[in-house]
Length: 234
Image (cartoon, rainbow, N blue to C red; front, side):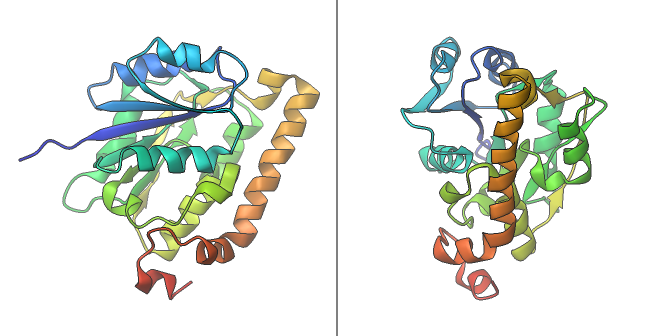
């Protein structure tokens, strides 16, 4: 029996101060066979930090958005059995969190996708939003079967998590929501300062709102690998 292959995709944009902590956990995990850092147009030393770890680095000169970065990562390794999506700014990531995300994809009734929920980490508006609106959380694991029937992700930018969750509903796929104790991430305001961080957060929310309002139309325009029987229901 061939061993399963797990690939971690880590999209990163100007995450020089934070990326190493995430890569240290992921590259030392026995659960992960390959890690790909997706440097989406960073102007800091994000790529230099990634180069210090046993990872594959994909880098773009211009920022294209989180959805496009993840799409490129999936296309780079089409033969994996399980895919982990992890943000580059996580705080207190542990191997146990990776196991919680990955284990529901196995067994007699495997999930198509898991969506992590932050629990008992740093209190912030983002953590509260992700607790009550799990559709926003970027810590996910996806099976190969699910990846092989996904629509095109590139248009979605920060709305990629909404697109994935809404598509799972349309495709009637099982999704699990493990609670990731103690895990959180750095807020945009902490990274960029109050005003720039708030402006960046507004941009994120606009992109998420666009995805929420338009995902069906955009799926029909960019169907990707969607099976015909699912596309006909949209």
